[in-house]
Image (cartoon, rainbow, N blue to C red):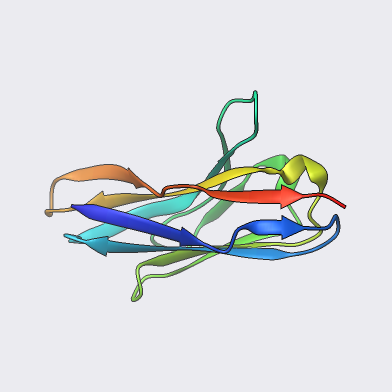
Length: 120
């Protein structure tokens, strides 16, 4: 069984910064892609940022230049540095990890979600 535990959400004023962290634990043989989705009230869940095991990153256009994703493979962690936050970034943020529990079996695990609210 694999667990992803998130931390770092909260309330911040427009223009402020937050750093989200997500740590994986459990029966892990290896981890492929990791990243973050978000879901705002009344909207579909969207991919915010992803990072491959080799460090290749991708971002949704609305956060490019403001958010930075990184990972620490030794610690099985992924982080999202969010700068210049806007009210439209308000959402529940979910981390994910594509975890191999054996050399050939891989599935996506999800964190519990952390609320990010950008408001004055």
